[in-house]
Amino acid sequence: MAKDIEVGSGNPAKDYQDPLPAPLIDPEELREWSFYRAIIAEFIATLLFLYVTVLTVIGYKKQTDTTLNGNECGGVGIHGIAWALGGMIFVLVYCTAGISGGHINPAVTFGLFLTRKVSLMRAILYMVAQSLGAICGVGLVKAFQSAYYTKYGGGANKLVDGYSTGTGLGAEIVGTFVIVYTVLSATDPELKARNSYVPVLAPLPIGFAVFVVHLATIPITGTGINPARSFGAAVIYNNDKVWNDQWIFWVGPFIGAAIAALHYQYILRAGAVKL
Image (cartoon, rainbow, N blue to C red; front, side, top):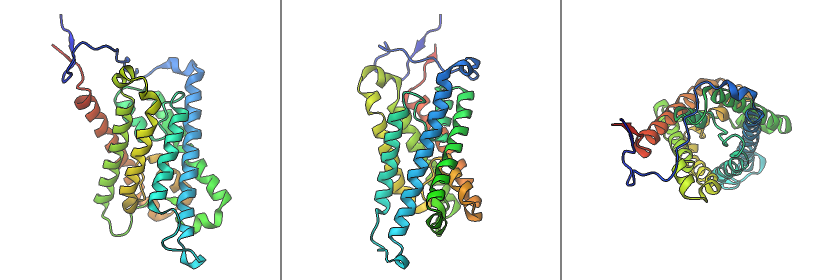
């Protein structure tokens, strides 16, 4: 009889059970209130993330605007923006992990779908909720600060002058790979089973990953790594340059998420083979 052998594991006798793969289509989800709670949680979390993101970017640009007596060396700077967004992700993942898994990013949802941790139906509805939440979050910023919002570019992602399309796409691919790789590693079932503190600490490495990726990619693309973030800002700002570059912030993150999922599944987890 064939049996499963864990490839690459120092201890083939596992002391934990991997959760069953999520079904591709699960009609039972539609009858569960927890399913709709999770979708609402993703909507609200992404709304809050975009609200803080765009306000932080606009606030920084205003503080450094010399035409308004700003200081070019003032404001929070790139470090401050990165800390704000990484910290916000830490908070939101901590708050929503027990409800929806704390994705807050279609690329993360896509990576988790590829590793069979969420169903296709849940993945699609999460992405819709995240995109709508992002639009609403940016809409709130524009409603509260319409003059500054328009003047400072609406916090929208676009390829920075001087960088090629290939460079921008590569930055989004690698940046999203880091995020999804961190999410998958921080929520790995083996670590959760053998280290009771891992579920509590999981939001920390995820938030820190967002911080370092922003440091690296803000000068190139403004840092997308989250299609909902880029899409929400583009819808409300509605600028030709932003829309022309929009594909980079979808194709790049989804490629990065797919590579991270494959790396996790076949290298880190070294999926069981039949012998």
